[in-house]
Image (cartoon, rainbow, N blue to C red; front, side, top):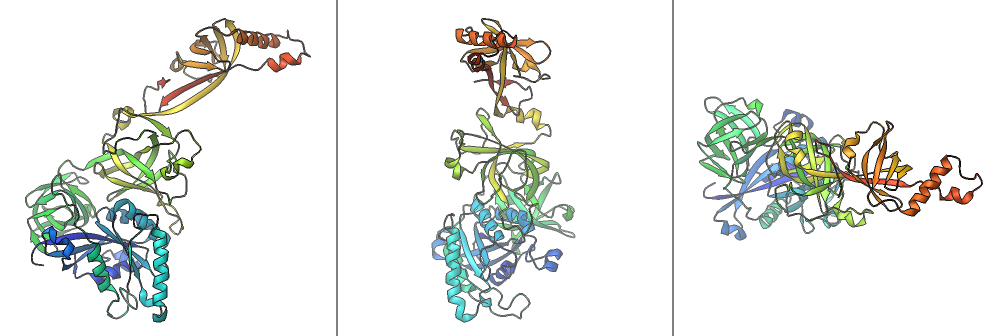
Amino acid sequence: MEGKILNFNVGVLGHVDSGKTSLAKALSTVASTACFDKNPQSRERGITIDLGFSSFVVDLPDHLIISGCNKLQYTLVDCPGHASLIRTIIGGAQIIDAMMLVVDITKGMQTQTAECLVIGEILCDHLLVVLNKLDLIPPEKQKATIEKMTKRIHLTLQHTKFANAKVIPVAAKPGGPDSPIVDSIGVTDLIEAMKAFSYIPKRNSNGPFLFAVDHCFSIRGQGTIMTGTVLQGSVAVNDNVEIPSLKVVKKVKSMQMFRQPVEKASQGDRVGVCVTQFDPKQLERGLVGSPSLIQTAFAVVAKVSKISYYKLPIETKAKFHVTLGHETVMAKVTFFGTEEKLDDNDTFIYDHTYKHQHELIDLKKVDSIESDYKPACQFALLEFERAAQILPNSILIGSKLDMDVHTNMCRLAFQGKVVEVFTEKNYHEVQLEKIKVYKNKSKEGVVERLVNDSEVIVKNLLKKDTNVQLFMGLKVKFSTGEDGVIDGTFGLSGKLKVRVSNGLLDTTKVLLQKNTGKKKGKAAPDSQSDSENSVPIKVILNFKKYVFSNDKKFIQS
């Protein structure tokens, strides 16, 4: 491993039993500490339940010479494919430069494969599809099966950003995992395809340091080792780093990259960091970073969009599993939006007024919605059931992981990016009230009787036990066209006095006198025309209620 090496992180995703771990083993020469089904439960069940990491080094392809490196190192992130462990995949997908989707050639695209594809679309721009287990197809049928399955996969990918993804057939472990050592088939072609689709990832060593830890262990006399991937910034020996979940700051004593000691690690690097001793059991996985960078959040506001593959309604007040980096927490959602196209920045605009939404709308289908309201931007308030360690502007995914694991429906509901973090426990009083989210409200009553030319008594507009003071001075509209203002209460039964700004129309007065006269028994019993004209005069109150406001004031345009 002489000379300068360019590191490229490839996420290996796919359905359970598609052969991802066997493929990673076939590709790899050097395994790191978190590698290949280290978890005892994983070995028993024969499936990966943590992120496994391994690497192999190849000669640098010509189109990457401008990087100034002379070798290309692939770090393979072997993500679990088991249905109930999708939260682990999301944690892994956030640290990859490209994705390798492994498909069992005998089964094709399955529900979990599609979910991996959804995650890939959200978090990654580069995809290579691997058709594994080619050895299970009789030799005479292999060519036709490869062509048929490649066609199907391209059909599935045609409406995604991966429409032109290359499909490579392989047999990573001919004969299955328990078979004797046999040379794999097609892996050399796969490595060449990987070299061709590799690029120089954008790395930025500036800014605060952030590190995704996937494994932690101690070495007596040296300290505690955290292995993981640098998500942003850089770290050097003797730097201080914070472990926010433990609320401690530790000093970096030494570092290694795939068994080679290094003084510094930058964004995208896979590294083992040795810090002063702490109990490794307290941090199996999580985020570590520059002091004060990672925040403890009780709630967040995120700019969100619906994942089209999710077929159920996504309603306000529902609960979803929300995954941000390596954290998955249960959260209650409240959706709101605006018809204005806001600047696509990473901060929330408090000065803007937003409309409350009963559910999240699929903006790809917004033109087919039969509604006057068609949002251009949608947001979600996510209130966590427990505090979460997160980074500002984190990508997040909301899912229904409590669905039946064998369901044939995508469980990933929405995706988004954090634009505001609420770090106070009492965020409802301190931060949330500043967000102006309104609901349109409408109430309707009827005029009971005329007091004089500019005042009437209205009933059924408010309930008997309503705090009328909140409604004093609000404008109302009569079904006959006049405008009025709520002036006060009348009696104890919830009736209101309404002042008519410019006086009642003569036709309204006549109608009211007829209605009043009919009630007193003055109208002739056989007078059909009077009966037809005695239509109640409606009084409509329209107002906006700010849902996060603590003073419960109502606003009218």
